[in-house]
Length: 391
Ligand SMILES: Cc1cc2nc3c(=O)[nH]c(=O)nc-3n(C[C@H](O)[C@H](O)[C@H](O)COP(=O)(O)OP(=O)(O)OC[C@H]3O[C@@H](n4cnc5c(N)ncnc54)[C@H](O)[C@@H]3O)c2cc1C
Image (cartoon, rainbow, N blue to C red; front, side, top):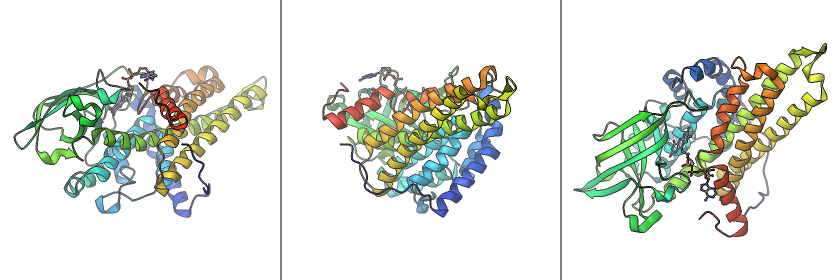
């Protein structure tokens, strides 16, 4: 059930403000100046990845003993918002690495697995990817066909993963596979697959509408042999692991979308106060102000929902539904904001001299990945009605 938290503060602590300022300055200095060229060239910017690792923005919610910064979810949201305002492709690196991969290893991994992978991932020395989706298993993730069979003292994995962010550059792939098709989702298991394993290969996906500077891959596992120590969690816990990762991943996407919304407000205010028509600034026209005011309202609403989800996570309370609410609202709002921002810019908004056309193209994927908007609605609907309408 959706429950309203009793105490939540909108005040940031001094430390949170400092992190927010640092992230804002980093986005302005390191991310924004590269965003247009990286987008134009479909360039996955490894130099930027190294900088994100260097400043501690990868794996920042991981405990310090494993190389993270041990920060709370609200602070994480502040970082992700700023990175998302800069460039959603860079934000995808932060979200996948931190929320999908690092969080899963920290929560479900053995001490050895944590020590082996987390310091490398948190520093950005290695990238990780999250291999859940397949050609015939998207929203219905539990129906995945990648097969893990026992082989000697370990496992042999064969299958095909699709749409995997960072799949061509990852050193480790978190791969979900079926161990016993008769058990359906209860047969799923998660594996930490070194991508230099024999039988592992990847190809790049090109021609995306947006997120062009993000690496997207198909993964092929052809009889990849792994030791028992590659299993993350227990056999049968794969679905639970995937869903817990998505609880954090959806939160991160939502925070990134708040960044897109804020970027749209900033760009629209700057442009409309500068540009004149009818011998007056665009901002002096009430219809232009309406476009901007609607953007502001939705940005603040989205941010409040993200902060509520953060608060619940930081309190250790259940938050799956509230995270879906935040992800659904923020992702849909980011598309509306970007569309409106293009309107404020007129023809200039239609070319990449300004960031708003990229905002629209990049925002578009956020209602698709980490669970489509329809799937978020089904999660929310199930929570309030008690009826599962997903299948
Ligand atoms: C750029 C990009 C990066 C991605 N990165 C990753 C990644 O790193 N790792 C990963 O594992 N995946 C990744 N994905 C995959 C993404 O999570 C899936 O695309 C998403 O889950 C939707 O699955 P699908 O594309 O197969 O669509 P489908 O599941 O085929 O859905 C198609 C349509 O049907 C609707 N639909 C499906 N089922 C229902 C239902 N029960 N009720 C109502 N409507 C329904 C959907 O909402 C959607 O509108 C990425 C995708 C993209 C585009």
